[in-house]
Image (cartoon, rainbow, N blue to C red; front, side):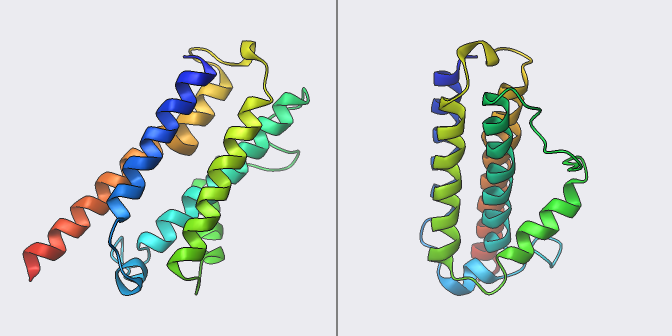
Length: 155
């Protein structure tokens, strides 16, 4: 898949994610419902965090470096998720969503600096698009929609 196709799919997945958040008030945004530890705020913040981390990886790749900086291990996903969620603690919905929007744009700008030959089936850049956004946004949009539907059924 080309860079252009990946950006289109990422943007569509992001719009699907944002649609799942449409109409949430601050209380709903802050409510912890995922393992009683996370809510929409933490989910949005961890998206921003992963886009930032992997966008930095795309930046490094454009300079001919390895995606992860020396000594950094992205495979400990829970560790990173905890960091990203902690970063969002106490932040209001507008601030978290602004950070997410910024992270998405920075990720796409980093991808624009990569040469076309870095994109294609099985290539690292394609995997980073999927992990940081495409499948990730879709997964969490579905979770949020299911949570919201369960709340309506409880009323």
